[in-house]
Image 1 (tube, rainbow, N blue to C red):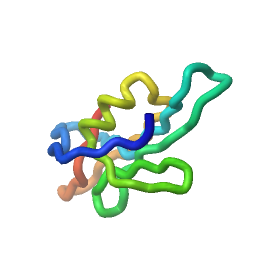
Image 2 (cartoon, one colour; image 1 turned 60 degrees about the vertical axis):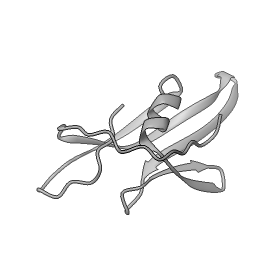
Image 3 (cartoon, one colour; image 1 turned 30 degrees about the vertical axis):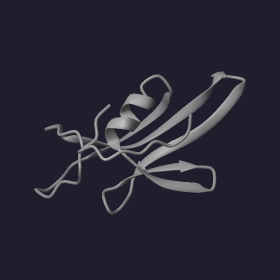
Image 4 (tube, one colour; image 1 turned 120 degrees about the horizontal axis):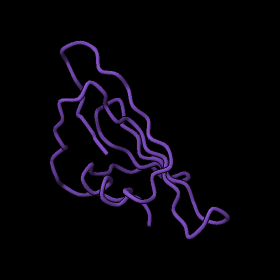
Amino acid sequence: MSCVSCQEEPVKTSSDYQLTGIVSHLGGSMMSGHYVSDVLGASGQLLCCNDSQVSVSCEASVLRSRARSSYLLFYTYRTGKQKAPSYRA
């Protein structure tokens, strides 16, 4: 499994925390596999980083495909009235 993309709308939440990154392990065991990361870029787009390739991803597809492979989740606390797109796991 690699990066995913789609045309769906971002998931709306009212949380004070925003998911800004996911590190996932793709593989059959702890001894083999591959790591990819999905990060919220400065422009508000979700980006999939897979070795030297970076592609735009869709939140809904990433959340579905990473549900069992997520290894680390990164959150930031939202401050101020202007909020970036919200992503939740």
